[in-house]
Image 1 (tube, rainbow, N blue to C red):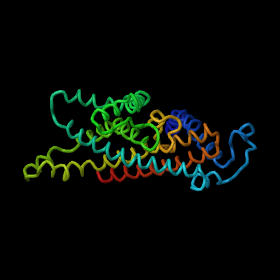
Image 2 (cartoon, one colour):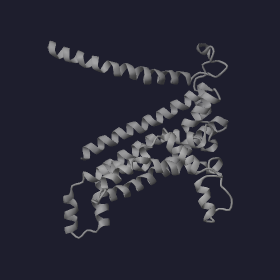
Image 3 (cartoon, one colour):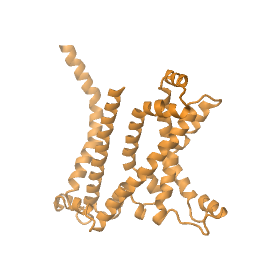
Length: 301
């Protein structure tokens, strides 16, 4: 009995540092942010934050009411990040699937090519998106240069400001994100038994029939996990918008960039905290859903 107690005590001592780090880095800031969201905390009340007026759910009402300017912008940021995800996630998945199918074949230099396709994904965001920002510059960017040369446009288009600002972010995000989808799907392809394809060939199944009857169904657990993870990361989107479009993307705001602007530029800390709490709840729901998907996938297998 004493040995069991000693083992449990040893385990607790090993886990304790991680628990303390999680508490100070995650738990306390979350509780603190949730508390601030119920206060009228701004630049005027920050000096004596303990005496900041308690306003209950007023911050939440403002960010979800379209008659307030902040509410209109926050709701639009949620709409923008959803549209952004509905385009980047499926397109990145399709590109990743096509490249994974090619890399699953045997050819000379396959290992080298597999390494090269990861370059966009492993490139630091600050480097990758600054390059894309240069590409989409109105006067010296490569996009306008070739569009003008091909006669598609008659004058340089301003891509990084206004209604078109979302397009560069979507294109650059697809370029940077599809290698991860390819890597995951390629691992899934290599786990499919070859006997299934051999049996399908004997039965006279075409390549397309083999894909829809064998490959795609067998990749469903991997696909579900990949899509849910991408949905979670989609709501975290910040670097690509901030680097490409600056601190004030205008109508291309997403929740993360708008929270930063409202809390640290406009100095409305209470409203910024309320927005952060809503974003955290959305991500928590998606995380729980991803865990349920993984559990369902493990039961199916």
